[in-house]
Amino acid sequence: MNPQELKTIMGSGLLSFPLTDFDSNGDFNKKGYIERLEWLAPYGASALFAAGGTGEFFSLTGDEYPGIIQTAVDTCRGVVPIIAGAGGPTRFAIQCAQAAEKAGAHGILLLPHYLTEAGQEGLAAHVEAVCKSVKFGVIVYNRASSRLKPDTLARLAERNPNLVGFKDGVGDIEAMVAIFQKMGDRFAYLGGLPTAEVYAAAYKAMGTPVYSSAVFNFIPKTAMDFYHAVANDDMATQHRLLKNFFMPYLELRNRVPGYAVSIVKAGAKLVGHDAGPVRAPLTDLKPDEMDALKALIDTLGPQ
Image 1 (cartoon, rainbow, N blue to C red):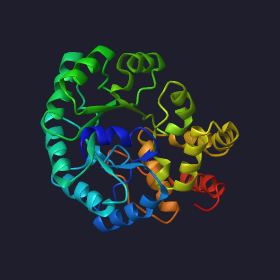
Image 2: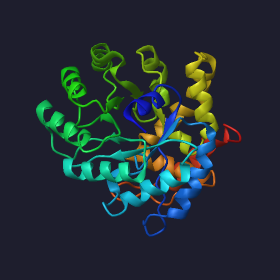
Image 3: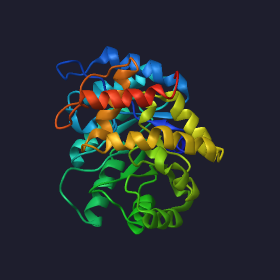
Image 4: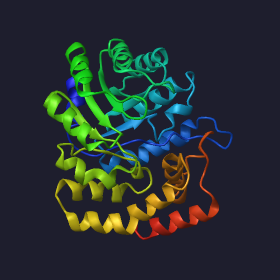
């Protein structure tokens, strides 16, 4: 797939991040991962991000990563496009990007680099090095210590034709409007705040109607229903689901840092698609939190 085809995929539809399956020892569970992808693929997501944030990219080793991406590509071939997560230190991000391209992924989502802060010049050098290491499309994820300004993005886009997407995980409305006004249709845009449904209507109003859903991992029908409600300006459905599910869900998610991933794995377990435990430093939900999440899921009906 060439970069422009990836940009087209990002232009409409709901995207999601499948969980990465681990066994009881915390090792990659290939069989469980295949079964997960086979379950989720028919629900209608326009693309799936393998080994993304919800897929615990940050906990994977360099040895594990290529096999996970290859498994996703092979399982979903001809059914749903696979975009691979890549990130961390520049040379590691390049290794991941090249492994994803070799595996046949449709592009990468470039997650933030490692802990250290950096200026715009350094961030641009990081993004450009990854872009120039591959031929397929790159989506940059604006989040945490990797926050690119409009002028930086413009220079990167001019020098790297395969940089075709921008995902926002910051939630700074002023900055997002400035980027959209600067870049226009040069990029495809993706809303990427945790539990993106809460912000979906606001992002649509800014010109970013597409977002990625983590809850698609355990309530795929509801996730698609909410996406269609946003697409059709069905405020009644949006408000009902926000009030009855998403806002109480946020209260659980916000109890502990890192629960944005842990609660999704908990939800998958509760609906019969257990992905195993999260890896440290994340922690799994406590029994009373599992009970509260189950009660919320039960209000939604069959998925």
